[in-house]
Length: 133
Image (cartoon, rainbow, N blue to C red; front, side):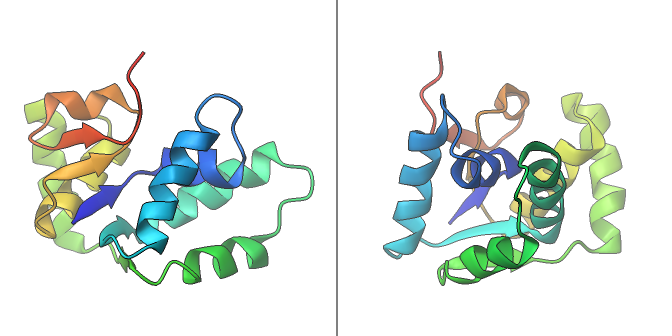
């Protein structure tokens, strides 16, 4: 199972000029049956980012498109995740958001993360899905 970072959803739904095609390919893999997971934090952050970028952003459409990804597991954040994230912030020099994603991913047993965020290169997760320029 791979963990899906916020930027994948933002690039996919926002049809990003640089990363949109790569994000769409990641989502296509999930639509075809690849097991993947993300955090409820990812959905909230995606909604916040898209709401600030898009003039006609629809939260209802966002939720419907995420629900259509039947092989995507949306994992809630747990209180213990915050405690572990504090440790990861120090160990890997991450901000809280990335540390929470790392915590959720490792709790679920993910070994890889779909992300273009180079901060994850400092962690045990293998970053995949985007060509690194």
